[in-house]
Image (cartoon, rainbow, N blue to C red; front, side, top):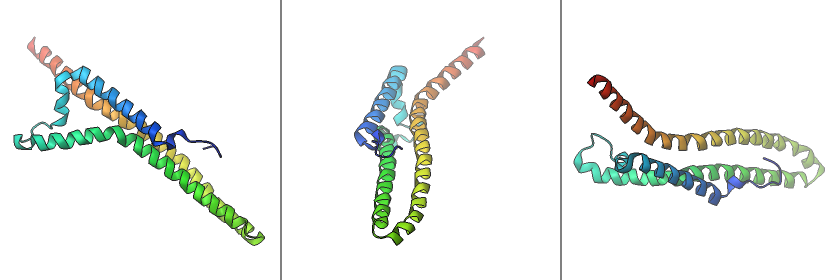
Length: 161
């Protein structure tokens, strides 16, 4: 957060395109790893047969929403914080330019703005964490199922001897 600088992550085009790129990469890796078993992700095991079409559609929509959710979340948080700081700083500037008395009283809201800036740094750290964890959990969905298949295969081989 540098004053008068430009935040690239406040543009929805950049963040959503990055999250869609990650989503496509995860989908391609999942398809190449599991091939047709990839679509087992859309239907929970032990699901009644009559609910399979409905659950498949719901899970498909939630899977497609993953592509946009990471970028949209990042953009909304960064943009809202920048707008809040811009509105409050403009308000304090207008207050302080009215008279000398209001200039002296204007330093009190500046302390609040400083607190919001510190809070914004904390939120940006949380957003960086979330933007790393969510794609990692998406990737985990594919590799845990293949790892459990591999482990069960190795366990079956060890019991066969």
